[in-house]
Picture 1 (spheres, one colour):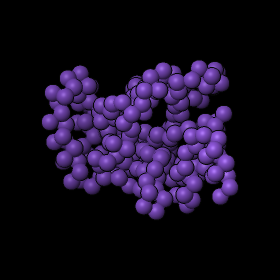
Picture 2: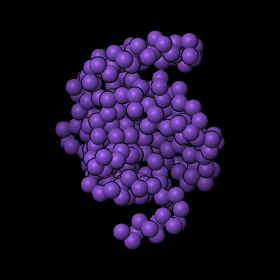
Picture 3: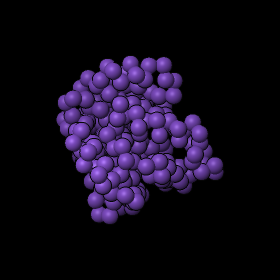
Picture 4: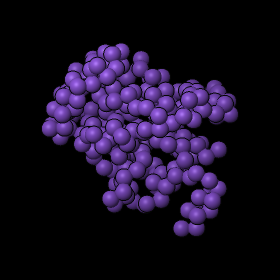
Length: 218
């Protein structure tokens, strides 16, 4: 299965602690899927938080929210959410490590001055919906002035792509996504730090067997 390529790489990174030894990290691997066969394939894997989401077929927002909701009891205000799609077989271990190290550096510097209020308020925002939207926009406006990066994104030259990583302070916005809107919609509203990849192929996603044949010829 295509998804196993990236998942096995992530599992190996976590289990073998390939990240800088000076970094103290705690990583939870979560797989969100609409396919029963993937749930069955991962049955018994204690190192993976597996989430079934039948609504994933309706759009990316459902997958994102299912993953976040499954982690609500574990997340801390200074944690980060790294979203990786399952169909990027050329994504490198080196790129993944850059994201993880970036998250840990941000946590150690404790640059989360506006996070406390946002984490406390997100349940209220979800409960009352659009009634609180104006107040939330004010919070975002103040945040943009601080130049405190809340989003990290992969990039090749000027082309941005997946993976994309978000501060947990952006959970309210991620949970407000609808339909096929993905994390990029949230990313565009914030200061984004780009992690450059060495090969453009890392950003390629495989949608068909034809794509595999095309990319393998490069």
